[in-house]
Image (cartoon, rainbow over all chains, first blue to last red):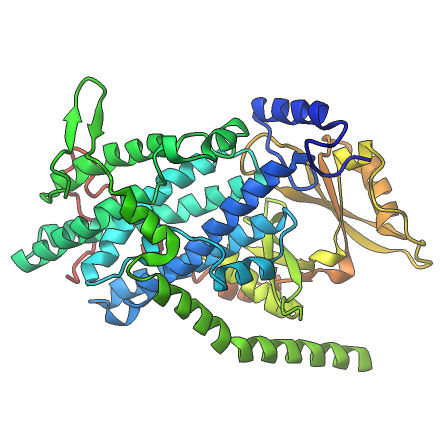
Length: 323
Length: 185
């Protein structure tokens, strides 16, 4: 009997693969329990768990500002946003679990530094304007990517993405509103907004991943409908949407080469500093060590809560049996 | 050491007219913990009237593919006292937001028998996946109006969590239309 996760060495792999690819071509979702190539499963686990880790680590740069929000309204918005990120992590870990990986394995990979998460969260949040800018640029870039992934061929990932995009749109809009409010404010507020945009613009472009020519997984991911667009396509969409809005808000972008190309309708950007990107991805960004340490500390310090809940559950079960 | 809590499958009902749907899972130590976590994870926006949780280990699930290949798990010894099973079914792989939906309950002596009966009874649509769950392992949010209100309504007045609250600020060609009631800055 064939395995659920086919390897090229399976005698019936080619026939199964043809059937699988025909399903994707027909626009069907692949669901847990369906046959799939082992490589499809591997790529999904890699992407989904990285994505889940990014949501969880993403709570850190913003969570640090909850106590320093300038008004009660902004505080409530930020708490809701950080809570959403925790929920997104949960949706995504669940989607990965349907592929046979355990939550514990994924957490272990994160805490040991083996697993990656989005490079963007290794930058510090220096001022309150960074919180708005993260909403506008970082969540804006994330939505572009996630809207694409909501079309993905794997059912559980696709459903998680639809849900996440709906909530992420709130993050994007509140960030945009916050930055525009500052851009229309006092000279000091305008300067804060501009400084934040200057620092986050390039990392936001980079978080959409290396150029297509340096992205070895992309062709496989596109072929199997995991991704439906390439990194450069998503990045171009992001720039086309955000550059004119930021300029309209009276702010500038830190790219002297940025220009609108009327022939293609695209905003053309200058060269991206990929050395910086790879340094951050490989653990040498400004905040990599702090972020991982904060996660490990939270996990260790939460141990008593996990133990208490387990003991409580065991005692309740015993009582139920005794009665 | 296994430090991982058991996994619970979460079924959410959006409105009284809709079926409970499998929306994802949570890890929790006991049923009530699972229900509370499920509410925090899956109902942060006002879109639920009821939630059920069941330990993933109690769910007997079979796909169309497995049935076709005779791969479903071996029958267990039938229970001399038949009990109630909830039946869930997935009928489409087409769109993103298609779920495993609750279709009804039946009495059976084992999950396998419940599956057989379900395949005879619920024939209005082709099933791509079946989930059969003993009713005794399902924990439900309380159905009283007070509980529904206290569990699911608090999200309703938190309009700042909705994207619609922020209007079309900064859209191309806009004049930076500001949302109403924005007076704190």
